[in-house]
Image (cartoon, rainbow, N blue to C red; front, top):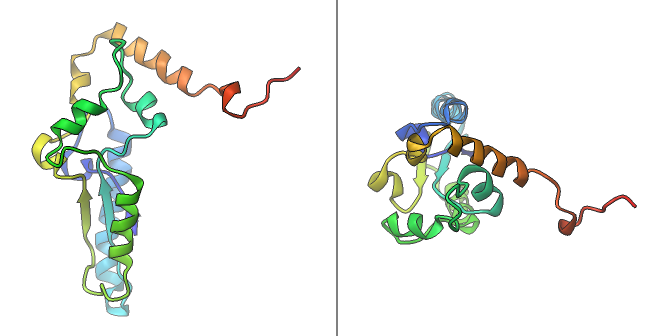
Length: 157
């Protein structure tokens, strides 16, 4: 069972390295499903949509305009009016790997509440950013990568 991204199907700006590597996993999943299927070894993948975490929001969706995270907007844009959870991925993995589920093979299942169908690629809003916006986003991402003494890091005395 592999985890890929929805843009193996849709493409997306600003994620070429990720898209290329995950597309390779998608092709591997399909190829190995055919190669090993006769031995009853199945290969499938999950392509999750937006699963908000603090780290992802700070690094991948910085709010350069000073407003709060755009999770509410993304939630409203999703046909199910919600974002995904780790539990959603776990439930799909359990279904795919269930012992009685022996005929699902070589598939990449998009798990995003229909978001890719309704909205297409992610990160397209960044195409409107200018150099100053990119600089602010870079500073915010760099700050998010710094250890925080309040998060269990001990400051040397």
